[in-house]
Length: 331
Ligand code: NAD
Ligand code: TDX
Image 1 (tube, rainbow, N blue to C red):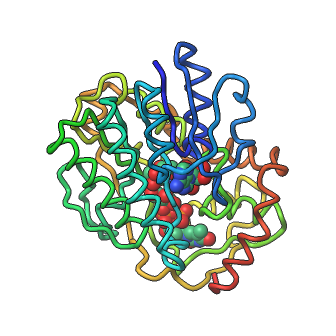
Image 2 (cartoon, rainbow, N blue to C red):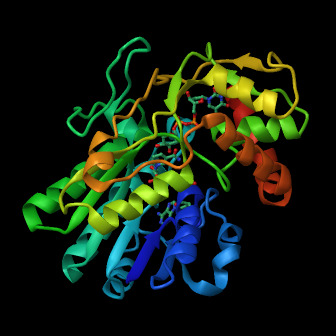
Image 3 (cartoon, rainbow, N blue to C red):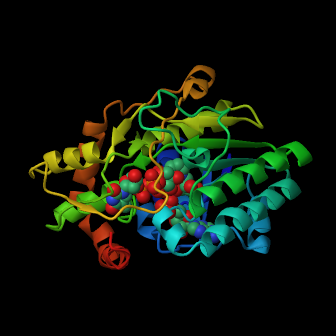
């Protein structure tokens, strides 16, 4: 199996590539990544000799057509992925998430190969804090931010190419991931690396917002389940029943790092901040037999905290610029 993994130098993509090389030695992996601020080639160091790396954009039609012509399956992780950035400057989100996905779809159509499109639960908008409901595959799309609206648009393009052109594609919508190699702009790595730098964690608004956390390895095993056994044309929601509010997550990080649980600052809220996400992964569990291996957020967080403590050389170069950008936003 020849896999083309786009966005493979990012957080989830690099973990996916490492897991694939470790657990599926019969797979040949090519990574296509534009190495934006979020891409980091060193995240692929442990498998550098086992893969091919191509530096380029999914929006480059000629390059994408050539690479897609040389593979059996495309797994599309490439995206602009951070909500705060999408509020400050939406344009790259339209270029990569919409135009880039369109270019991939056209190349996949031209060469009749299989594609899996990696998406997010944010396409569904948010739920009330006290609502017992969770998102399912039938929940209507109602995205809130420039980021989530471009991800929603990309999902709809994939669906249209499936229906109109018979494309052999699947989509997955996953909840919030945590684990090693996540950029320090994101909530958990930002707070962990703040504490490791002697700085207090920064909590938006009241900290009551709820996210449904899943370890990145569980997400990636679910993606392999979809690639192996998923029905073409279908969407699968991925989540591990990991709902926690932001205050609980920050206090857990502080506990793991031996700090008082009130050692954090409240900062101004994110405009349009989604209240709560929650995934019903019943279809994935019953149809594809997937179950998460990281059942407990506290122990998954403890191993993630340890990874950041042991890999300062990986995150320190990005920390200063990230915090400078946040301080301009007052967050
Ligand atoms: P990330 O920002 O860490 O990585 C994105 C990668 O894509 C980077 O390596 C970047 O260089 C690359 N990239 C950006 N623009 C590109 C372009 N035009 N061409 C080629 N490569 C490009 O993001 P992530 O958190 O790893 O997310 C990966 C995917 O999973 C995204 O599609 C995201 O929407 C989705 N997702 C993320 C989460 C999460 O919690 N992080 C949850 C659900 C879904
Ligand atoms: O410093 C912070 N303080 C804070 O309270 C940051 C960076 C975030 N937050 C809050 C905002 C959210 O409620 O933490 C929560 C998580 O924030 P992010 O890490 O920015 O993630 P989120 O906006 O929920 O989106 C993430 O999950 C879905 C990913 O970034 C997306 O790519 C994915 O699609």
